[in-house]
Image (cartoon, rainbow, N blue to C red; front, side):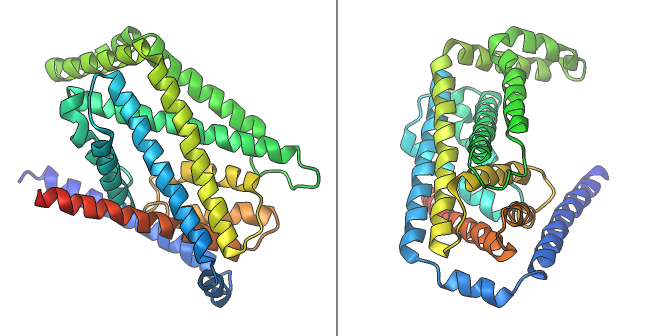
Length: 325
């Protein structure tokens, strides 16, 4: 073992420990400001039928996510049954929820599709494209929600102005468009990197360019995936609406259309363990701005997260079944 390996392992554990500390400190700070007994009572009195509705909505969300992935892979000529992709997605969901990192699931998705996609690079670009379109859909849903709130008389303004969200969507679209419109230009832009390792990096640039060319030749796949992403993010909001109904929390659907996507975007920052603490702090900030107590924010955030983690256990079953087969 080289001397660099122990240092790399030490940095990894230090990074995980830092994220764990951030999550614990934020949760401790939030729980110190509430009546924990009232929080627990709210969770115990949750409506089971509405929680089941939330789980069913989330199941539809996962099915739609598998369909989106299938569209993008189809544009690359990768013929993979949707059932297989669904199993891979469930395993990825399990890894994302039970490992201290949200990239573990992407590793599973890339590994499972690398051979049919032609290379790990192609599979990686497909997953990244799926992520980028999903992010743009998040911003779009939040922008629509904030715009709707601005038109509701007597409603407190959303903490984030609609214009910021629409501007962010335009910037994301403008930054992504050149990759599809001019794939060769992206390859030329990355060409100087070949000085580091001409053959290895050159092959990956060629694979990247080929993937982008395929996307340019199949715009219907990108359009369908984006439409699917909007549907997926919309169902996530509906899932939270059902959770809020189950808990008796009186918050408008348009408010959830803002805070849920924003919380997902905030969770992308690698500063906490699976978003714990950061997500709850984001919900608490928004809920207090619209006149709701922190207990309500924590209830909605934690119960919804618990439901997602419960659903993701199906991925553990798929993973075990794979090992046996």
